[in-house]
Length: 291
Image (cartoon, rainbow, N blue to C red; front, side, top):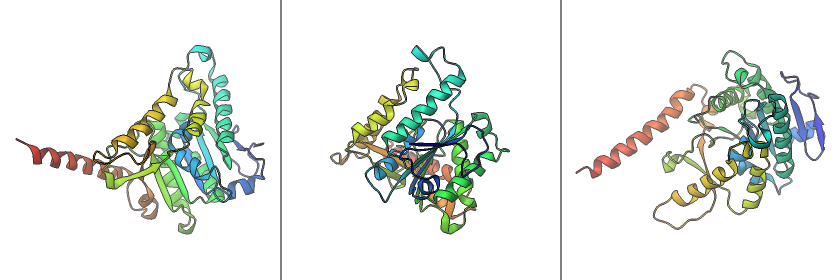
């Protein structure tokens, strides 16, 4: 295993690090990434970008790379972690994220160590510049990030920074697909034709291992391990009312690819179009049955 602190790339936060589970040279580890997850907090990648992890785990021609943008200092804590300082918890969460990278056989795991306050500052371009460096080095085929209807401000800020960074790439270097994923708000409200449906059935033991590694959060008072598995199960069963289940674990995503192929599109207007389609669908269905 190899831990690199600001070796080839120079990040803005002094404690940012690059972790390479199989010890390959940094340039190779970055270049081989085909599926890149860009999340706000430690554990977001495992919850939202599991489809990318699963697509790559048994392959030599596809590799998952992870980027966690914040330092995790504001996490809730109780039980054995109740007395931990922010600095202690940040270190624990960093180790947990790297442990997940080992379990999931990531090609690379990058932790940028930003305070959430900096990430949410629209005048601060440092995160976007770091992400641009990473995207230039990896040039992934698929990017997973937070969806623009998420209710967590830090998640939204990371998504906005990721889209802005991708837009700065030359068109030939941009990913073929960008998917906004579920964390704080699910996406079952999207019309079926607008859903990116990611079937993650068949490796539930792997999903459980990835989710459960974040003990500081689970023991600290948040049963994310149960919630995420339950959401995926609910998505699979409640996706279709008139057919047998074809999967037992499903993640929904929002297709954000158009935002990087058409830079004139405004992110706010783009997501609001999906919301308006949902509004119109509810109105039409109720109106047709009004008595």
